[in-house]
Image (cartoon, rainbow, N blue to C red; front, side, top):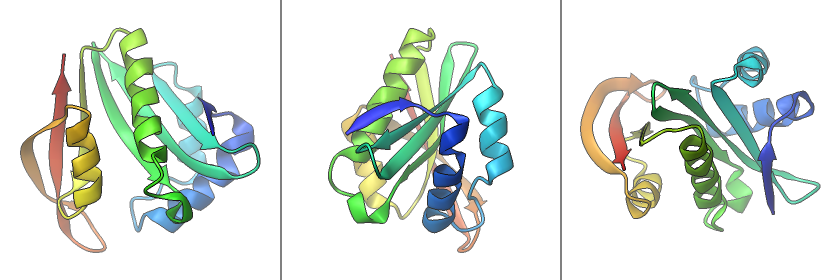
Amino acid sequence: MQIRKATTNDVNNIARLEKSCFSTEAWNSNSILESLDMEYRLFFVASDGECHLGHGCITNICGEGEITNIAVDPRYRQKGIGRSIVEKLLAAGREAGDTAFTLEVRQNNSKAIALYESLGFVSEGIRPHFYSDPDEGANIMWLRE
């Protein structure tokens, strides 16, 4: 598996995986293209050379990195791909000068929460009704270095 910066050639695969992984929060092709053009936002894809396994995005602002998106193809979950993507995002954020990282995750996504906790993230609050379809709060997590 390799993790590399996303390019415009990846947009269709990213959008397709977004649609299969998320309900109303899925990023569309236009938002993905816009993200690729933002110098303060880094988008990475994980692939095995042929198959798009997953992707992630981090926004770097004022020394903080917000992990805005993580998606792994359901066929390849529980194989360390999500962890590798998050580790790549953290490394890229550190390289950009970030000393704190944050993300939101559905309250009932215990596997993702356990992953983030294993990387040092701590829950610091809940955003009620953050997600829709179904309506659910977001666990706000931070990693401060």
